[in-house]
Amino acid sequence: MQEKAGMAASPRSDKPFLSDIQTIRQRARAHMERGAVTDSYTLDRATVLKLLNEALATEIVCVLRYKAHYYLASGINAKSVAAEFLEHAAEEQAHADRIAERITQLDGQPNFSPDGLSGRSHSEFVVPEDLASMIEENLVAERIAIDSYREIINYVGDRDTTTKRLLEEILAVEEEHAEDMKTLMENFGQKGEPAKPGAGGKE
Image 1: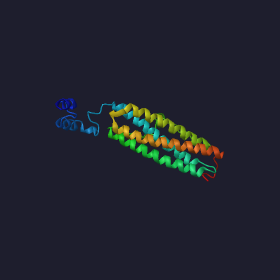
Image 2: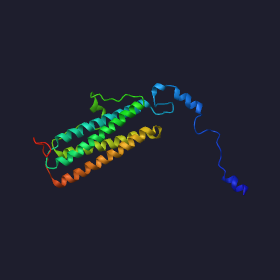
Image 3: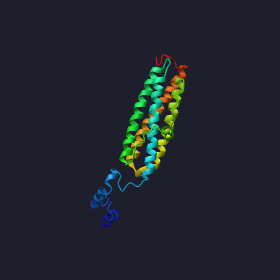
Image 4: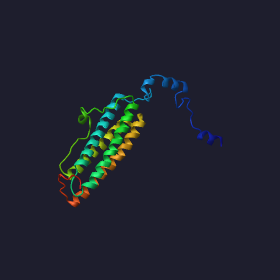
C-alpha cells in the first residue's frame, strides 16, 4: 500500500505558478500611462498596432463598399440583395468599432484618416455597374478578410488572448458574410437577371 501511494505521488515544484503579489502590484504601478499594456505583454506592440490599424482600414472600406452597393443596387431582385448589403455594412461598422477600441486599449491610436485608407486596407473599394458583379466583389472582399484575420490570429497566438479572441469572433462573422454572398451569387445565377443599374434605383 505504501508503494502504491508513493507511485501515485506527483513531484512538487517550489516554483510558484504566478508572480508574488508584491511583484504584481509593483508592475501595475509602473508605467500606468500605458493602461492595459503591462510588462507581461511580450508581443511587438508596434507590429500588433500596425496589423490592427490595417484591419480597421479593411473594415472601413468594407462599410463604404457595402453602403455604395446598397444605394446603387437596381433590378428586379435588388431590394432583397440590397437589404443584405446594408446588414453587412452595419456589422462591418461594429467590427471597426471593436478593433478601434482594442487599439486604444493597447495604448495605440486608431487611424481613421481617409488619407491612405485604401492603401492600408487589405480589401478594395470596387463598385461595379451590375448587381451580380457587386455580389461577386463582396464575396472576394470577404475571402480576403478571412485570410487576413487568420494570419493575424496565427501571429498573435496565445501571447495576446484578448486580441486573438476579438479577431476570432470577427472572423466567424466574416465567414458568415462570405457564405451569404455565395448563396446570393448562386441564387442570382439561377434567376439570370442582368440587373443593369437604372435611374429608378432599387425596385
